[in-house]
Length: 236
Image (cartoon, rainbow, N blue to C red; front, side, top):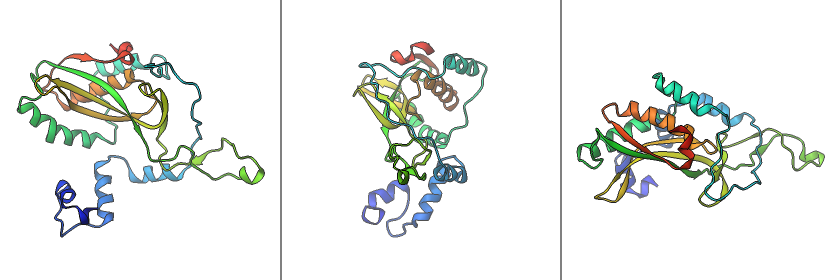
């Protein structure tokens, strides 16, 4: 695609007549995604439990409940004690986004008063291209068992089933969580933070982590108000 689209070349900072090889792009991705490539590769080739798609549907606009009672209070206590949640592979992406997009927007006045920001948080469903069925390595099919629950290999072993409350259906993938501030003049939400989490994770849990990380990204910003939907009620 790079060989046929000069715009893509300019976007990633290479000359159309001097495009690096595929291996170079993989090395670049590994530098951006702060996870040990050996650990990630080992997770992809190892076996993982097979999870069937849930059959029970939730009510309209109903969110998945927290899987671990008391987890929100635990995260709140850690955040108030000054603990950070630095172990995340997308940390460099967040820092680059803050440097090249958010801070220039703040300097241009697009975010409004950064010493009295009103922000809102919510998630969106992100489907993965990986198969939820995985690749079988057992001999069950040879023995006439075609519906087994044996461990399998998955191309995207971190993907999970989550509930899409808007479309009222289950999806396989991740949840993207965003913190935004609203620009009245542009009548648009301006994102200042993004995070990728497990699909079934409760928004109330993610919100605590997101606010802690955003505070570390923007120590000079003052978050005056936080707005969230019903899934955040337990974390207020």
